[in-house]
Length: 132
Image (cartoon, rainbow, N blue to C red; front, side, top):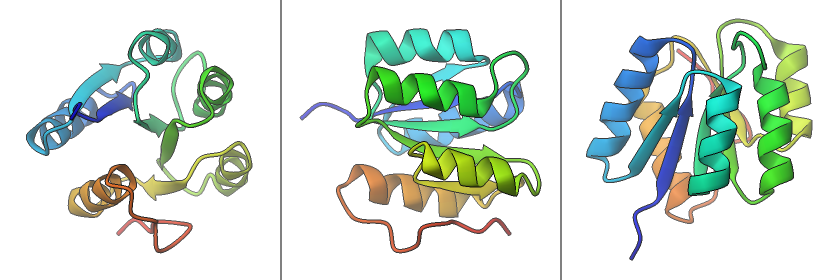
């Protein structure tokens, strides 16, 4: 069986490294991108199963990237990461097909469990994840 692929898109290196370590140790094939351009290249070439996408990225923002990801492959699951009450953006992200969002600083175990649930075919219990 092929390893599931997770793409982490965040302009903060520390968050990418943390998530990369977590999801690599979970047995996923993990990729990272610091901006939308790199993220979309990886989406085209690697077809990730799930993308963890930061809402606030310099240049092409999260919503823009989300639109492009869904245009390339609507079946890719996307979970947004938001820094603070970007509620209007969160609603728009959900309308564009994002599954849910985690608010930073997020609980890494919660996120790990949610990604595992999404990638192991289980359905998500709630529409929104709540940050701590």
